Image 1 (spheres, rainbow, N blue to C red):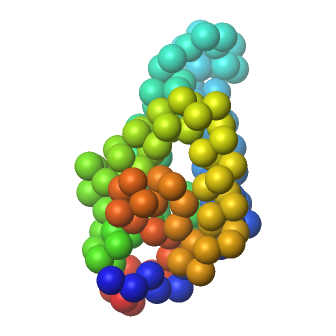
Image 2: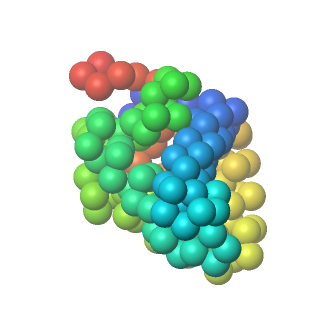
Amino acid sequence: MEVQNPAGFWNRLGGRLIDAVIVTVILGIIFWIVYGEFLRDGSSIFDTLGVAYTVIVPVLWSGYTIGRKLVGNRIVRKDHRNVGIGKMLLREVVSAFIYAFSLGIALIVSAFMVGIREDKRAIHDFIAGTYVTHNPPGKM
């Protein structure tokens, strides 16, 4: 199926950055309340909750996270349906291992793919069979 109204590099990056700030602030406040520190050094719970946010929220909210909603893009399956937990795990977790294993080279390649390709799909989009669109739910 054809990719419709794909979101470009800067739009996607903006959504990710907004999400990173939101997750850091919210979890930082929780850590401050619980531990008396804004962010606790070496805490894997921070990473786990951050990944859970990027995997679960788009499944529950038609491909949006808070940052994506603010910049006007969402993640959808290549067949234009909403993403499920399996697609999001492939997209976020499996691709993170690939990016780490390649020492970040695959991440740089992905950034160029989003900037250059007509369909704006990155490596993680190909792994999961997804793309990022400006189209709201129901307008495919």
